[in-house]
Length: 183
Image (spheres, rainbow, N blue to C red):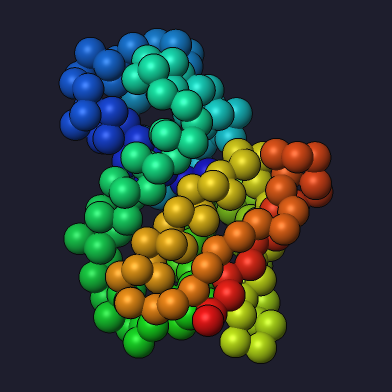
């Protein structure tokens, strides 16, 4: 996993609960206090899971609440950081089709071939008529975050679509299968 996700999580914690909370999350997750997460470096997925669990503990929120808050923060940051991604698409469907390529673009800075492959193997989007079927495979099990981000993208473009999950790795399935259906 590239460090953007961890960096934004730590930024969210610091913005919402202060530097002390951010330091406590790192301490509980057994992450060095002086670690600065970088977008062009690969970090262990297990470390992410520890950071996420520690965030829920320190902020006293459920994983679902953490995904919701993180989706808002991540989405706003993405719009500021990469406005062209949103301008390139005329609707949410176009954007969501492009999303795996955007995601995989982060892997180009990772030198280790195996780590790069782990990043690029996480997402696959297939078109099913007007609808999209997203295959998500990650030990981090961030399918809830993906669905919340897809909903925000749909709302941004003013589209009329729903997002639901047919299979989920949290329930023991081999991968998550997320359907985006337009009305």
